[in-house]
Amino acid sequence: MGGQVRPVTQADYPEFRRLLLAERERLLQELATLGERLQQVEEIGLVEAANEDDYGDVASEAFEREKGFALETSVQGMLRMVEDALRKLEAGTYGTCERCGGPIDVERLRALPFASLCIRCKAEQERESGSGNGWSG
Image (cartoon, rainbow, N blue to C red):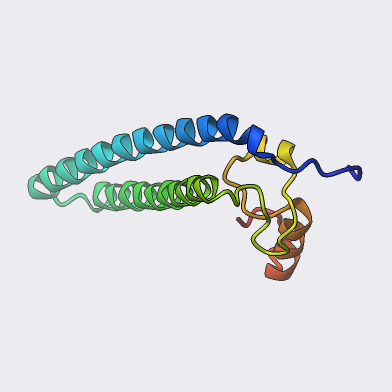
């Protein structure tokens, strides 16, 4: 995958603004849906808890709620990254690696418009965090 990194130019900005705005819209929708679902889980949970002492149900409700909150947190995290990327577009610093200051390849950004690290720094970060499984953000 060696080869030349093609940096983002001002000419690419409109394309990435579109991508980021679409991504932000999608994430906001997802948050709204998650919020509604969590609300329902809360309400159902309260009704069921009042009606019976079935601990299995209560435990699965708690699990659903936890899962919902975890999802919500990760969606909010992504939303923050999208907002940061939009701010960088406004400032004219979009597509620059936050770690080494070098350009992030335009193809990487097309795949992940809110990437803040170039491929090399991302790989180094994963090595340092020692996760070993490559799944860490």
